[in-house]
Image 1 (cartoon, rainbow, N blue to C red):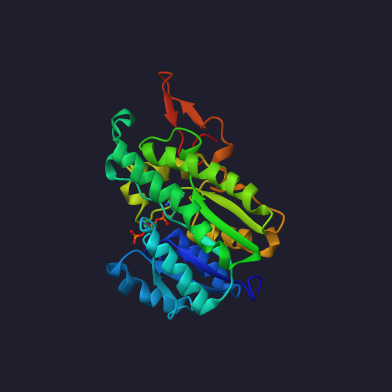
Image 2: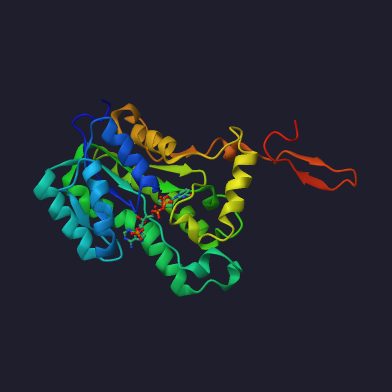
Length: 275
Ligand code: NAP
């Protein structure tokens, strides 16, 4: 029971396909006590059975991170019901649809600001507001994607947001290390979730990743959950400011495995076809 005695809050469970659910589940299995949040009333009802299952039926709080007063209210609820906490999972991102397909050059300032606010600034704001109730041996985890490092078709605006998020992790890690707060990110491979459905041609991304990742399959929320649990636990007490890949190894590839047809045209080699 690696998380026995640990208390925390998980932001970003939309349903049982959410990466945050995978992380919460792994933490629960290892003995953690948790609270989870929902975006608005529409999601409260959906999340109630999930909260029950995670053992936090009475700790389900509203938190739309675009509303600073809801983050303050979250801290008050957590303090009242749990006292100190040891971990925060920030598994939240949003970009208007126009930012997730089409020409990058056409992205509006409005869409850009919304994506940066919800997907990046919210990490700083949540950590700052919850800091007074964080223990002096605590861990913060957020979620990123390889599209924040390298070009990925259609990831467009979210790629820029993830690049900013990854640097935010590093600056927060340095700033908060002296307070005993670690800050890390998992860079997860593509997984079919609600948020992912908004990215243009996402099913192609899944196929491409499975074909070219060394492990030759896409990762699951259980795999991301287990790695997340490690980063939230004392097992990773010497780790901070880290972007940890859980992507089947995709990020190490410098060149996809292709073979050429009889006309000399490159032919994408799906699972093992080139061998
Ligand atoms: P998800 O299940 O749709 O989770 C995204 C969560 O963000 C939802 O719970 C959503 O709430 C929440 N959210 C959006 N706007 C919010 C706001 N203003 N305030 C509070 N919560 C808000 O999708 P997911 O794929 O698990 O995404 C979780 C994280 O993993 C994101 O940061 C995503 O970029 C990252 N990630 C995903 C993948 C992937 O392929 N799926 C890969 C790497 C990284 P509602 O659903 O209630 O709107």
